[in-house]
Image 1: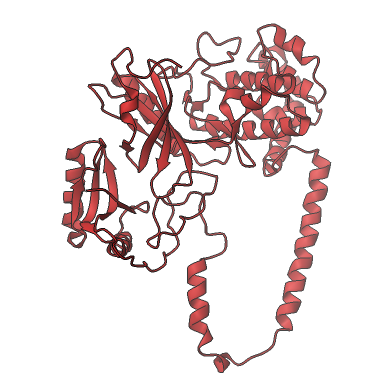
Image 2 (image 1 turned 30 degrees about the vertical axis):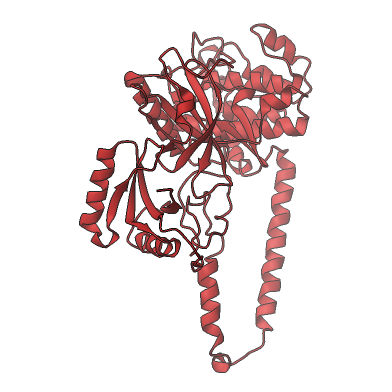
Length: 476
């Protein structure tokens, strides 16, 4: 790593430590930097147990704005196998405005694992399944990943996720070259910009995962000969040099189970010869949609037997529940009049079964207890469970605030505060700039005690304020 004291644009990255980005992401220590980029550890305000990173890139102009727009588009995608941004934007500093993207910190990367050992076949199956699902989510939306490689695959607990910070629009080069792609499809000049190129890079990634060898040019197909079936068949079809003859993601299950995949080049096959395989292809796609619900690939017959077993089990369970209900004691409704309110209150606190969403709100519980536990699907705001009553503490300084919005420009913060006061005058929205930050907060009610802030936060939520509204104490 080079010195971080200054860059070619005289940017001192270390001066950003302590800055709070829009959305409640505070930059902690600088982890690494060079002349054009830097990475920080991030504190997620209101959820300090969550681990995140912020990557900064020193770029300017329309390309920078287009890159931020791409990241924000990726953030709107909801899929368990995609590592989408938590936040993205530009941060004015020292006459520059570098772009940044905030990402969840993974447990490990596939490239890190491969530096020590090759993957077992079961692990390769899991990687291949996760990668296929991620790409099948991106391609119909008009995006191409462009950088598929072991460097872009990460483990979050039991889930494998593909990064999205280097995605680009279909048939378009990325606005900012964040990093060079490790693998380029044979038809790609400088950038991978087609779904077929992503498929080729998927084959190269699978080959590297099984052999620990980097796929290099014409040697890729020769290297694939050392791989056991069915992975050999998958890699050979995915690494086909001619994109017109290359297999598609929809062909993966057929390749995985050893079935023959029809060549896709219509020019090389008479029309009458294509009729029957096309019908088979449709059936295969229908089967793939059903199998897609499973976590890893399995032979079709085993899948059918497993599904049939679950149907039998469900029928038996329904019968048992019905018998228990029929044999329940018949108590008069008014035997326990006082028990009903308690049951209702508990049901209200617990909520309907399965109502939990993917990402906990960035709020601090008024009683100081831990925030809602992190799930692992997508950074989308959620409504937290009703907090416990605030517990007053002796000597609690009156420096607590209810944070509604975060802005990088003071004018934007003042406009938002004025709009809130016109619609909700009881919230007394104000602007506040914490010390040693470059951010401007829109807060409700000014300075107050912890218990007062907790009550005002609940009032703000009831009046439609953002779900990630949180309370925070600041040094005056």
